[in-house]
Amino acid sequence: MNIKVHNMNKFLGCLMMTAVSTVAFAQGGTNSPYSQFGLGELSYQGVSQNRGMNGLGIALHSGNQVNTANPASYAHIDSLTMLFDMGASVSLTHFQENGQKKNARTGNFEYAVGSFRLFKNVGASFGIAPVTDIGYEYSSSSYLEEVQSKMTSTYVGDGGLNKLYVGAGVRLFNSLSLGFNVGYLWGEYSRSITLASSTAINTLYKHYHADISNYMLDFGLQYDLKFNKNDMLTLGLTYALGHKLNSDVECNIINSNSTTSKADTTKMVVSNGLELPHKFGVGLAYKHGNTLTVGVDGEMQRWGSISFPTEENGTYQLKSGALKDNYRVTVGTEWVPKYNSRRLIDRIRYRLGAGYMTPYYKIGNIDGPKQYSASLGFGIPIQNQINARSYVNISAQWVHQAVDGLLKENTFRINVGITFNERWFAKWKVE
Image 1 (cartoon, rainbow, N blue to C red):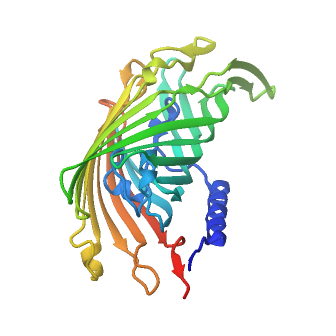
Image 2: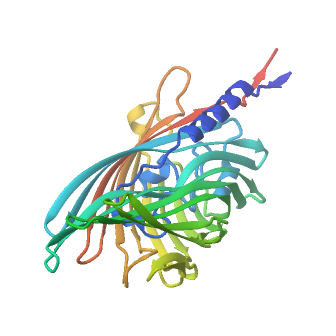
């Protein structure tokens, strides 16, 4: 007879690991002053495999790797497999402005996701990942001749959005797959500005804050066009629902006097002031057997249709025109010399990628920084007596963003992820 073994203890263990990751998850993946605009720096979506190709993933699917860039890919998870993928990163950023240079380092837990087969032609996924990131602290000074005083402005911000999701993908026909993710979106929006003079006794402090707790929903489609046994072209489409976040944004302006120890506080609130845009994606990928994959992704987010809370001339209200639609284009490839070879070196996955993204916010009346990026990655098999299917994925990424006359940033990031691939659902034959 055949007995199908479901290792429930291991499955519950993965869920517990995700829960622990949720508790430990903290923003800290950026130190860019540009993250003070909008809802912060947009985080890269996808796992370690995607990051080696600079985020490529809308048209990719595999039976032994999780791909959160398109939920339709869950339908292709191998029936014997339980996947679990965790990743972290370390970054070094070089800042340059007006002849001044500075370096800063950050380290961050990036994501934890899992995926498994539910039924025939139906797969599922769950996990936690960042959506946006806010993290900066800097100051600027100027000398005012008319009052013979040095004015110092200090800017501090932290927070961002995170998501905890579950999703499913179903293969309707041999060529068509559909999928969705639904999840819990949470985070904090916190920015402050302090204006202080070296001679004046008054200090002006402005603090902008919001707690965010809402939902997220996105959908995906993949269609395979097979030319022969080894060659296939896949079209991928994604859509993420834009909606209000039901979050009130506060602006507190405090004018304190160091002599009298008194402070005048003005509090202004914009009700339901934060919003996510509709997001559209399209991808195309060519795959030759298990050896070569080449693809291109394009994404558009409709930030331009969103009004954003802005403080001007003593008022705090929603303002249109502060944000703009942004676009991202990514190209990438993965190559495996000999997929079925017994030699570990022949099964290493080599990855390359490059991308370009336009800004989604404005700085005053000018556009924010355009972003150029490139990546190089490797997927190294974990070879031991009981497992030859898991991988250590390592990638290096360079990101450049700048605005003429303002800050220039060059970030070098190392991403490390581990994809655990276990055969939990095997059938054992008992004689």
